Image 1 (cartoon, rainbow, N blue to C red):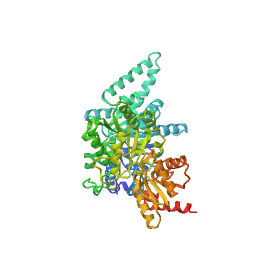
Image 2: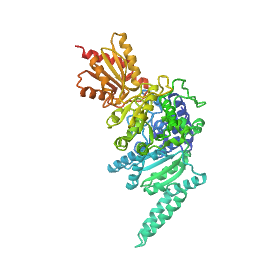
Image 3: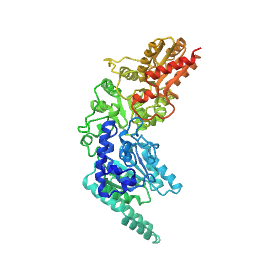
Image 4: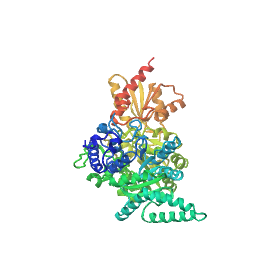
Amino acid sequence: MGVLLDRIRSPEDLKKLPLDALPQLAAEIRERIISVVSKTGGHLASNLGSIELTIALHYVFDSPHDKLLFDVGHQSYTHKLLTGRSDRFDTLRTYGGISGFPHFEESEHDPYTVGHAGTSISSALGLNEGMRRIGDPHTTVAIIGDGSLTAGLAFEGLNQSGHLDRNIIIVVNDNKMSISPNVGALSSYLSRKLTGNTATAIRKRLKNVLRSIPQVGDDVFRLLVRLEEGFKGAITPGFLFEALGFEYVGPIEGHWIERLVETFQNVKRLDHSVVVHVHTIKGYGYLPAESEPWKFHGVGPFDPATGKTLSKPGPKSYTQIFGETLVKLANADKKILGITAAMPSGTGLEFLATDLPDQFYDVGITEQHSVTFASGLAKMGFKPVVAIYSTFLQRALDQIIHDVALQNLPVIFAVDRAGLVGDDGPTHHGSFDLSFLRLVPGLIIASPKDEAELVNLLYSAFRWNSPAAIRYPRGVGIGAAIPEEPSMIEPGKGELLREGKDGVIAAIGNMVLPSMKAAEQLAAQGISVSVINARFAKPIDAELICSQAKATGRVLTVEENAAVGGFGAGVLETLADAGILAPVRVLGLPDHFVEHGAQNILRANLGLDADGIAEAMRRLLTSTQS
């Protein structure tokens, strides 16, 4: 730890430091973040780029009374270090440790638990309006990146915020926009001066004087306002924000703490909605992250001296298999198009973007738009694949129902990160996709037992001529051999992998392999169970499951999805429709949000590893023995 950082236990301690000591504190925080993230993994580049900004915000504003809301929240490490969590920072993203995102149960300085983009402005406005109604004079500050501003929710929040014109402050952390030095320096100077005490007082006094002049005063004042706005608008990129009713300030150099502090001190005194545009560099201060910020957005353990990851060679990830397979299929069929919502690398579509750029679209953080956009392409005879993480696909349920399924359009959803994602925690676990997708009429839902089956399902999905979702987990596969020529899989057809007489385990997706291992454990104890690779959550292979339920008399379903409304619920419905009265136990994610931690630890705790599945079957057998 650093000399200054050791003294910071709260924002009040930060405020005791002289302004000229803050750059040293920033350097100590930067060193600490690099050191910890190199061991635990995490979001590095975004945090390195927002250190000075976060220090300035806490130096000026009064958290937790003033509410600081970090959009997405993956850039909140400095915030954690300044708000009493420095002594626990080494536990970042580890089981039982502190979260990699703001978490309302972790600190009073975290107003919300967040992990999805575009939410900060709406939530900040709600907090701000609630505070106003109870007479709380403090303000709210939403810190949102230029990427998150593409989210529709962000514009909805901007629209109402500008309309209400409260004392909400929106900080746009812009780390991509190219602004020339001269324009940036001039607009920064104007913004600081135009929001300073003298300029603000003069503006108010002039307004009052002019409006006291009968008949012409209002007209003259409006003319002066238009002239000022025209002058600022000619040299600053604030047109949109001013049109929505905000005063625009910036762009401000985001790594110049003294200038940030001065600007925020001026802005804090204003009594209306303000946008502060801050220009930062992602990965700032650490050359590997500055050079390749996309590689250090979310990173595993690495060597801080070189920036090279410490991962060992092993099987390819499901994401990589999906990406490589899609390129092969798209090469053979030019109507296949890939769509991502700002995550080409995370979803594996970077391969398509590189090899077949004309068949690739990155639509930004606009999950709802990506689905409806795909529906339009499908209407015109194309074969769109929308690759989105499970947790983010939740945002587009209405579009899946209304724009795709209702019209029976053959859009394929590649649902990455389905199930437990590990260290990112409850905002990122893909816990619900089987449940919310199963209710959509006409949607085929499949999940492969291994990477070879993923290839076959993706190949098959283009031939089903139906809306379809293929969900697969985060991480590497089991090392299954990838077929040279994919095989066709009929919708709703599972496979019987093992026959037994005492019960049947019906598993789906990445729960099939541990179910097979559980069956081996049980066999060593004299218990004989069948194992079904269900493959499909909809339509379910009713014939296979019902026949095994009749033959064995007991059914255990296993899924890495919420037990409520998921695959197991579908099996129960299937057996009920068939009039089969067999004891059934549904094993899945519990009816509460699962904390962060390594995937193997979480699965073991939740009974979703081989030992847990075997124990669940033993309990089912014991409870049903006559």
